[in-house]
Image 1 (tube, rainbow, N blue to C red):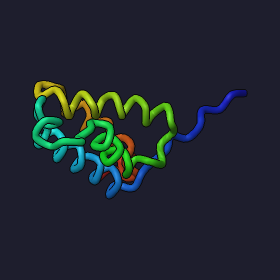
Image 2 (cartoon, rainbow, N blue to C red):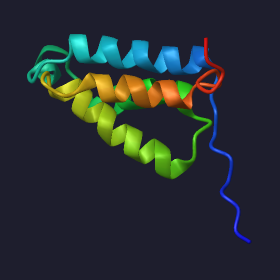
Image 3 (tube, rainbow, N blue to C red):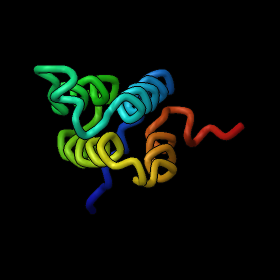
Image 4 (spheres, rainbow, N blue to C red):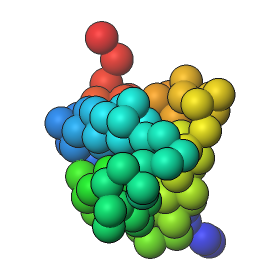
Length: 97
């Protein structure tokens, strides 16, 4: 019999922190940011946004990294699906209110 590993759950504070960081980066990003802020690199913003999610498996982090990059650089990206995805990672996602 094969068992499915229990999905990794994160503390709600960590998922909230990630959401906050993505929002800050998305609000402050513009296509010429690297010209206005010499040395700016999207990779630094991505690392900062992903830091609270470090407890997730590497493959899941890679998917989130791509998603977050899109959310930061594309003003029309669907942020609601990302918010829902973060909510499912929270340790209180299955607890109900």
